[in-house]
Length: 324
Image (cartoon, rainbow, N blue to C red):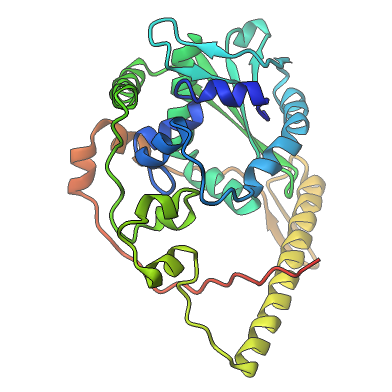
């Protein structure tokens, strides 16, 4: 839900659900010091438009309608500003409350991720940041459960994830938020992240935070210019071709998804069919998953013991935006 100016000012007086990942310093974006700058009114170095937030604001009403049709629930939209009775610095602005008897008291959180993020969540589950945000909301509102309506406009699809109240996790959140807020009241800034942290490269306060440590070259680095400039006409032509190919691939993916939906419609209740063009199966396949997020939250020492690093070189291309 897009916040009013009054709500934005009110949020500075406490910790909201979207702030919890910063309280925990949760990767890939969370930072305790960034949250301190925000709550103490430090002027941003960069006020960069967040496309994800804009997409969410535009699609939110559509997503709620989609949720009501898919779930059969009725949502009461609310702009009420919730505040914890026991811990006044814990705040919440929820997207809605479910009013049907079967789910009475359940709160709704709408997410409108990109296509890639949506399918990643379908495979791997919702991120830890969402889990912390939801438990924070349940703590503040005394809700017994909440549902995440995760809507992808590109695929015109939605995943509804119900999460029950977890008082053990809520107690950990309260403890962490109380500790952070006590430092905030004393105006004690948390420690910075390590030098060169990827989270710093996109932070709106990245120059302010490191201004005394970075030299001129490093300032350019943090301004996202840590790339070697090349004046290579042939290489540039290859990138332009790659850009066109990516657009074609995106279009092809959309066509494949469209034909898959058509196939599933023709399949109806059938599990396996054979036609002159080939064989098709459309059936439930059981898979087993391990809740690694819960393992990290509840048994971090055990999770660390079995953690290992692996990786490979990854080619990423960021096309230059065309001037309008």
